[in-house]
Image (cartoon, rainbow, N blue to C red; front, side, top):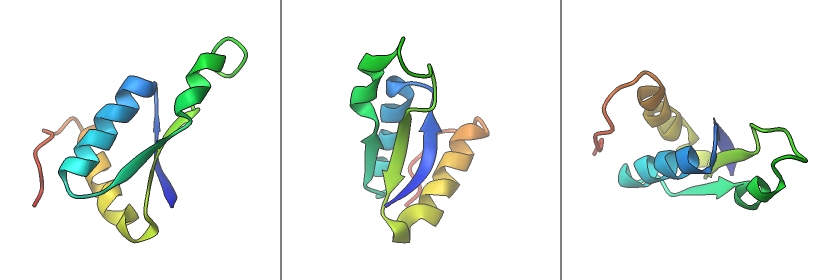
Length: 76
């Protein structure tokens, strides 16, 4: 598994995960339970999106479109 995205918060992580999965890329939200430690941990950078090694390039393309403010259309 490779980390392909650091989300600002758990909500954004699930939005990105859903977008990847809609494009046929299974994804995992890592650091999900660390949100409970906010106040004791750094406020950002603890929630990440992980995908299989062989799908990391495709995932990064979808994420680049998301970061560029493009539509969240499904690329099939």
